[in-house]
Amino acid sequence: MAKFAVILPAAGKSSRFKDKHYKKPFASLAGRAVWLHSAEKFLDRDDTPQVIVVIGPEDREDFDFKFSANVAILGIDVVEGGAQRADSVAAALARVRPEIDFVCVHDAARPCLATEWIDRVYAAAEADGAAILAIPISGTVKRVSNQKIIEETVTRAGLWEAQTPQVFRRELLMQAHAQKNASTATDDAQLVEQLGHPVRVVTGSPLNLKISTKSDLRMAEMALKALPKPRLDGPAHPFSDGDMWR
Image 1 (cartoon, helix red, strand yellow):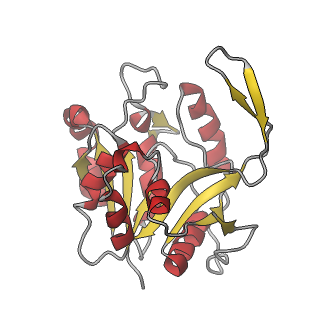
Image 2: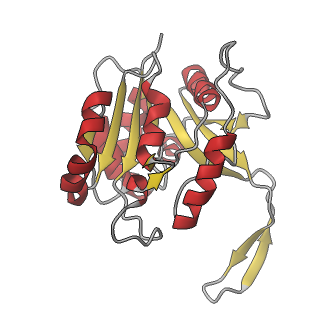
């Protein structure tokens, strides 16, 4: 059985969340911190022996005060991140255990995750070396100027919105992060794409939302109640439900 490590980046500035007391991964959602909802989906998996949460150095004291008991009981590793997301992921990669085969990067602020989605993206990564969850863009897309004037309507054909988890063979992700332009990437899949390695897209769900503002917390609380229950008959086929190459 392949072994996976999960990296949960939580070192961002949360500038859109606009709360002087909490960054979005540490805000309360249905009685628990957002990042704990994200972490717990991986903690009871036999194929995932390591979960790493990445926090900002400025958050260390407060994080330890609030969550040190959770970290100790759950066996989670805590790493201090850098200025950019890529720096944070790279810091966590350096702490991945030697026996790990694949690394899964999942937004700490994306708490509404179903077991079957993890199963599918894990299986796709095992088959192809790199896979992400994503959903096709369904709305009309406009390119807008800085003056908030529509410049053009962009065809949505073939456009997908990337989500996490994003899962990669360990050596591949380490090679991707060794690139000189790693800090400019907006997600890890972009780094792997730059290597010329194909990344499999696995159909995700709109329920797998990322919390950016306080209003997203209310939506996430409803989404948690609507998540599909774990399957009793094994994982779904990884390339079902309209999956495609990206």
